[in-house]
Amino acid sequence: MTTMTHSFFALHQQPEPLLLINIWDPASAVLAQQQGAKALGTSSAALAWSLGYPDGQQLPVAELLAAVQRILRVIQLPFTVDIEQGYSDEPTQVAELVLQLAELGVAGINIEDGTATPELLCTKIRACRRLLNERALFINARTDVYLAQLAAGPEAVSECRRRLALYQESGADGAFVPCLTDLAVAKQLSQHSSLPLNLMGWPEEATLQDLTQAGVKRLSAGPALFLQSYQAYQQAVRSFLQPERLADHPLNYADLNNLFS
Image (cartoon, rainbow, N blue to C red):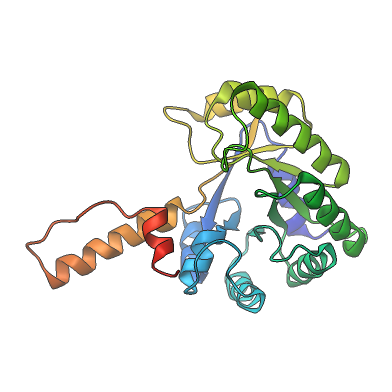
């Protein structure tokens, strides 16, 4: 296990959650590093947008690998890469991509189920483990039960628990549940799984202590930092071109994604 990978695993075992900063290019990476980030990770949406593609598995793998290499060249922190659903439904192809990323020096990946069956993600994770062949890599398995609204209420909780158990059996190291904002539910999930729990975005009015008590081990930002950054850029351009004109509305995911569709 490399030093960076070892450090990345250890960051998920601390009492307080790892605050993972999502970046998309070398400039955002070095600025986050300068500000004291402990680890960095791509947002799939932010990385795709920065390269001129919409989010949703539209980024060519060659572009992904080149972007990862540029980021790794300038950082000295553990780095994880969001690969969406692996850019393929073929587990062998997904595993080959994951091995390429590991050989470049990344410490981890995110891989998601989306609206596909959880069994498909299990097959992909197992294929990754076979091809990695004892090489350590933090596989953060993301379930979209809440993000894609695949279930609600108690059914959503039980479905998350079922999927996370399957992913752990298949070789996942972490559990990612984006759009889960109820810390009581987060606590239930963390108590029924030994996988470190990752949420996306600060739940409203939650403190670091609240997250710790709920068993959250990692908090990432998703595309939020990119959207905030480019909102500021959009307003700066508008101000330069038309100083008297005020901002129309905040930049959001759909607005930005549609620019590349």
